Image (cartoon, rainbow over all chains, first blue to last red; front, side):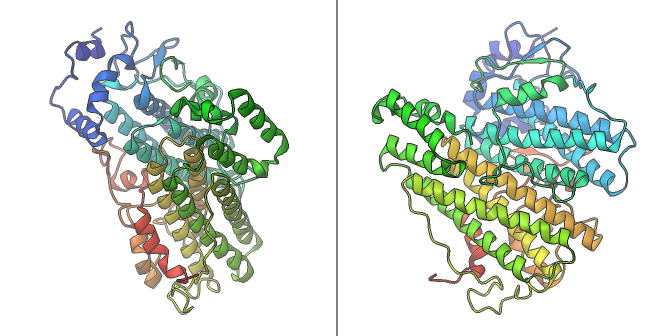
Length: 242
Length: 285
């Protein structure tokens, strides 16, 4: 299998196949003022023996594979991309169960599509530096009942909020921090809505009792909590996210 | 906020931090003593004090300024809900309880920010007087029925929460590299978004309107009539579908225009927010 990372790196530049996605990714990099860093980080986005192709469709990695997130701001973006992949996959499966109906169905379809939009955003923005498509493992989730689905949804949304809030401190580029902020408040809206479906006025029972703050979690904590839902393993060594 | 990691954080951005403190050992001892002695309510003060000890008076004025701006918004929200709980004809106890919870959060955010600012060597601003009719003290502004008209109250509440989310989001880049301070601001930001989502859900159910969602569709407030016209600027820019150079609309077959706008919330600058809340503040107070 051809490794696009190696190929691009050996040329000292990214591949330019003229696709619109590439144009958009380069626009994103320019916007972020990060094209130099992007090239420099290209090699570290994937381990040298890694032959996973991020562009190979919906499933690029396998059980037991180890995924490296890269380093610096791109590690944070890949971390977010991993979580968005997980959330999108969860809601795609949840919607297809037929257990969610009425107004809840309408709004859960919205949530599914928001997560797909987030996933696709990170995939396009990261381009060749993106981690591969991950393989979810939802065997521990009860998809047979509304309550089971909503309980899992609440856990995913609250985890998403804690993850983004905890990731902000690792970002050094203002535009990335703003983009993370634009997404996390939508995740918080989801979290509050899902909580309301389970228990009325539970929309913010996630907060600390002293100062009513949401709780941030470090990437290592989040990935250990999310690990059982993803077949691949993550290696944070060198990512700066430890 | 993980206060126990603060020395580590300072060390990362300023390797000489321990030289500024008496010694690493005494700093750690001081810190662990703080952790033991202070109640949870004192931790923000402890945090600020550590910064002050490490940096003298140079807790950047820009950071204090951002925190005071946040404090102004929290004063505004807290007072709005305090008056609402005393006056609004809530349709039932469950609806009132929602705002008991939200008011409690805003009061706690006020306490948190005041403690953090003081501890960091800054001076927390005092609360101005507010005129929630939106007439800068004249009391006869367009929102004067907000505490007697429940639907209008919900509309103003939604607008304040959505605007609060935008305000915190707009300040995040000004706190980049501040570690725990940034994280605390983010931890408030997402709580404001939870409030906004809940109030929007209440409005969706009350109005039976599918256009009102827990998230922001396009740049619509979903508020009808004259009040809707008055909050247009609070939602300006929410309609964007281009994120950092990436077009979100149609990025995937499921991503319609509405989905593209809903899936990202947009920031507002401090100046924009100050203009938006100006009518609620009595000048010179």
